Image (cartoon, rainbow, N blue to C red; front, side, top):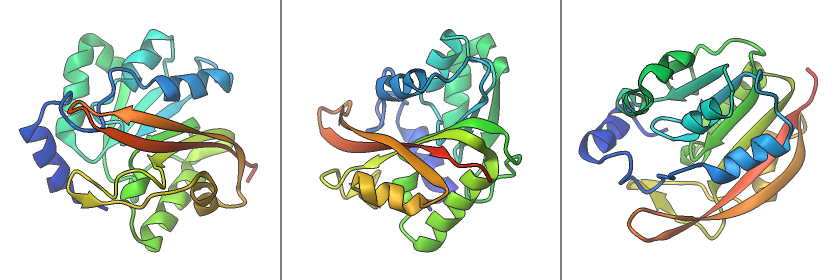
Length: 206
């Protein structure tokens, strides 16, 4: 897992709209959440959400039980400043997802775009899956997006693990029922293209 100092440096030297993963709107994530019929009363956590605009759009849609978790305090501060008074409606967690003090069975939706692919050891990935099992309610929706097999080999100067849809779901295993997967061609602010794969599954009763 990349260090906190790494991400603090990234957000100290680049604006949120300059980083390669910036999206004006997390359109595919919003589509998956809405198509799954997630009610606006659902508890949603955006893991690695940082400065992402997903929280802005979920608030605009009426979701009122939102948590954003990120390793970088600077990234979270960027989102808070952008939201202004609306930031008070969100719970902000500056923490490493692998050891964050997440409440048990608290979330109806777990969303992660581009954290999981930075976990390059089996031990880190197992700790991540354990966190999902602990924090997501039985029957909850889990959306995880990583670089696809034909995506970049590195991001922000760091190595990543690329996945096919089957391989990504395989990391989570039997406690999660695969609902589907989608690919995305993300266009970076600098004009490049990054191929992502999104897997969405349902956590089985436990």
